[in-house]
Image 1 (cartoon, rainbow, N blue to C red):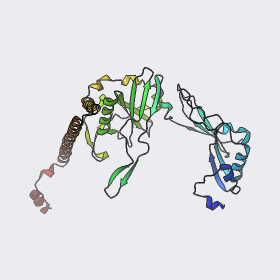
Image 2 (cartoon, one colour):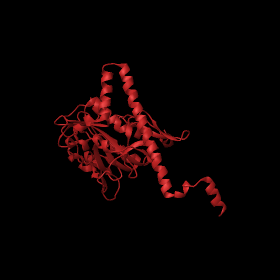
Image 3 (cartoon, rainbow, N blue to C red):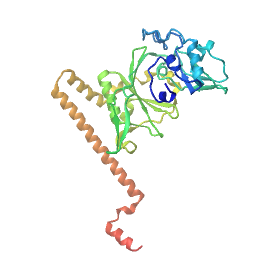
Image 4 (spheres, rainbow, N blue to C red):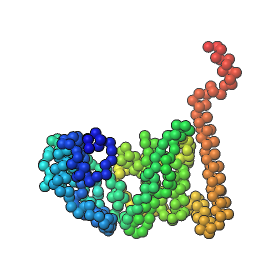
Length: 356
């Protein structure tokens, strides 16, 4: 097989057999992360979690043999090999190492990961701000469930209707469940923002009130400023004191303002989640409405289910209409204050224009 026939294609081969087809020094860089021979196919450890068996395969019982590395060096001009500390007997020492600081905190995984490179340059350290699994483990955490139901959806701009549409179903369920050692449970919804605009759609908040009614668990919203690696957490009672508004930055959808994140993300493992266990949320009017809906569903009473669903829908539409009316009034008043002359009649404007 010619080299040009191999490029930009996926080849389902044994990698060693495939490398034998490649000419000497024809690859600019091989970037690889071979099995470390540490039995990761048999167990998975993290913090206080028990080990759990995830595979019956033997892919990580041993490291690749010398022939594997010899082929890599033969076909490539440069190499970056992760886990280089596991393959010392096959790798010639070089000046440059890439050190990945995984910031594992309480995890039982290694704090660092080393890559052997072929470059004679200075050693480089890449520090991760967090790992999504370990960052949720505080001193009081028993376990964490990551749902991530929104991870596969994309936002695509439809040029025909000139709107942003969601490709794939977007979930309104929380992203994470945190269970503490005292068995208090928290559902956590993650939100991110750009350009220092921190707001959350009203229907996101209402869906969490629904989760409180259905699961009787505390629900929290965590806003992340990914540019600055800051966060802020609020329980749902926060929104009882906030006035919803029509948000121009989100296609005039009804939103709530959210506090600007100001807490460094690496302090998350020190968070006392019990401090957010606010029982007042159970008295929220929306929680009570969704509880009535839950009862109608559990009793399989289609009549009351339909009545309650439509009453909730009606109240949402009425509130949205009133918010938009107030918003339009505010926007009109701002124009009048900025340019009082707009109050003139068109006849008056025509008369004044003729004097120019």
